[in-house]
Length: 185
Image (cartoon, rainbow, N blue to C red; front, side, top):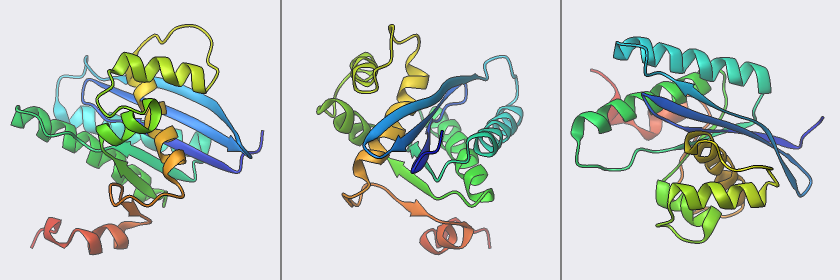
């Protein structure tokens, strides 16, 4: 099937990473695929990051998304968890930029609000609403893949509403010019 736009959504994680791909055909939104990359059996952080990079590349090559939407890490109390999550997100972004796929970031609150109308909604509420919006039969099996679909759908909803909450990088040059302090000197 031909779509006007394909969006790959990612819910980054170092134990489970959600992936969801939606296709937009006029006003209809269809789920192309949703999956969870399980990384718990890999012992080292570098192996997990390599698996994330390879999986994102494989999904880009398989589904040819026009854009990648990703949840940016929330600020938690555990600095080590935040660091690992940021690395996972960075590797996914690097894979998209490697294939010249524009990247958009959204906060967890923005994603929940765009799907349920409430920024403080639970993962289960988001999953339930997604199943209704996208006409998915059954009950949500896991929240990692539905969170990834939520990121993709949030991006679709935001397409005409610049909010300042999301960032768009069309390639390495755009990323570097927007993040000069991240360069090693």
